[in-house]
Image 1 (tube, one colour):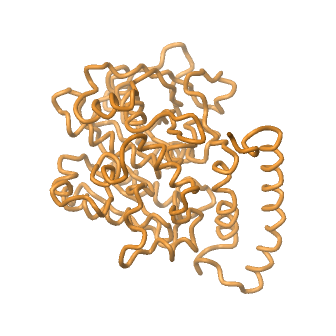
Image 2 (tube, rainbow, N blue to C red):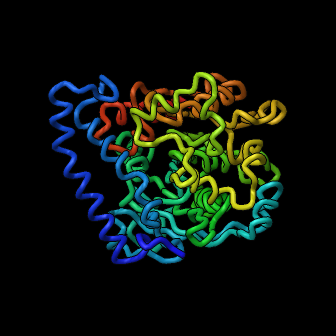
Length: 404
């Protein structure tokens, strides 16, 4: 039986009371930090400190209310509601392009590729026909985060500040970006939906739309992802790497912001782990509570896959500490140039460091960058107030792309 709070009007009443309570705490926090109370990180401004406190209070609310702020991927959004972006339909992936391990997982959970939406940021044209790629044109495809279970590619989402940011700071490199409205995962108490590899198939549809429908050369397509979207992004690039016989090519680069590299949680309690220390300075807490957003996201992603098997699977947990040496060896060989961003103050930092160490072994030095931004929180690039770190990071990535 669904929790009472998952139904109206109780959900709205709860949300209203929760938000009111948080707003009431803000003056107290301002006074507290203004009279000398230690901030989680000495370098933080009052604005950053307040933002983290507010996010920490609200981050678990989707789990509490059952409202994961997603959008129905079967419905078209009218242009008046797209906030300056262009709504785009992506055709499903042809069945002959779904093969190997991914096909086996898809068959096991009875998922298949379907038509899904995307949102185009920048210059996608106003006419009925979307303009084809012009010679040498680069494009960025973003995959939003949200623990696999929430969020949207729609510009109402905080993650939209990433595709927007690349247009703002990389306008000489990109005139348009696209964000994929992949199907979210869900599990009990919600209706079970979208386990791995559903999101991979949806983002593959986005890549094929760019390369085969619009005619972008694969090397001119750059794929980015934040948090859980970073996990999906690396799994998509892994699939392209694993199956060159399908003729889909390889993207020009992979960009990961605070990637959720180990949703199975093997780093919690590991020697020298910073997760619990950094939980004091991040809005994301260690995901060990079975009722937490992270554990729900893991259950929803895995479906019928066991946690033990997931810890051995680089498609699902490329940062797992329990992965066998045979799997780790060459895990990122043949990957395109990669740029990984981690926050020095984020809870997921342990797994991000493991991920980048494995990448650094396999990817040529001149093609790999790891940028650990001091005192930054999880997904700080999605927060316009996190300056100057946000703009500096985006500018550095654009410079890196231009040098490739």
